[in-house]
Length: 396
Image 1 (cartoon, rainbow, N blue to C red):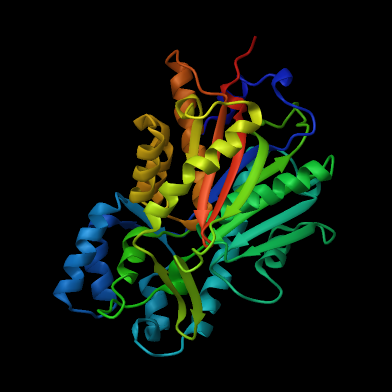
Image 2: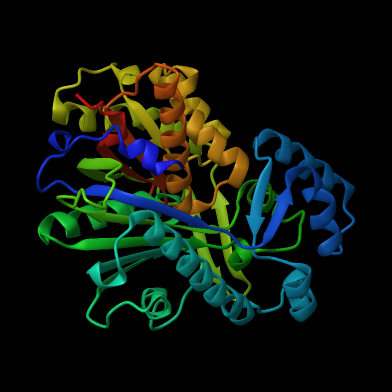
């Protein structure tokens, strides 16, 4: 990411006292890298399915998602140990959770350690932990196992967000912002971790919508450090979190429908989901923009860090708001390289946005200071944060 180079552009005068800032980012992935061009053959071979119609459908979907690569926990070793995962009608939720609980903890620890390294602080400075996942279910929750795995102090204050889906990363950031601003001097570790094994199923003509997930979703973990009043001797503030808003759209709770069953999680995504998001995104963004006096329609005067739920959603947002193509380039890159990794993906978008901004400044251009961090999840729930890009501030 080149954070040392980024930090040279940040001035102390540009940081508002008491406002939460993102101080570091980190990510981690399972070892299996899947190339989209080989996914179809591998998926049908591993699930012992020979349905040419479904195979053709998945081939089309793999092209339309724009995904090129993804990381996944699923492996040949797992399928050899748990062959029942590719059988229909067999209760496998116990086996799935056995795999998922271990995998998400391992990835969350690795992402958090990477984030801590980028931050420069110490474990003893972490006062709060926010953990987000839609890929596990256990008591105690993954927040405890993450705290234990990292070696956090037993008095670290923990909170767990379960099953927030694709909006979970920004929801966790909203919660971390509130914690940081209401506890002066605190340092909040936000970690997200997801795996698709919880919903992995063989192809079936009775569940054609499952193929969308096969073509789109990926695994991984991400982490952020959030706090107020950065210690500039070693902390490198990246984004200031000004205002956070959450809103659900009435009568849309069935449009993203997930159920935990004896065979794992089953998802159904309504075909009209991109249209619903398009119809509501303008008013939601205007509400956030009005906080600092942006006039309606000044969308290209902002940066945009949007969770890439899929190309159709990004295309609809771009069209409705008349955004320049480069405004969603970080989101499209994250989708292409990692797929939709649920709650993790917003961190991958922010990393790409910082990288692109650094290149723009090196080439003599400039970044927009203000922008929006957005995600959409079950509810349908909109999560949004009006933020300042501290990397864009020039030394005066």
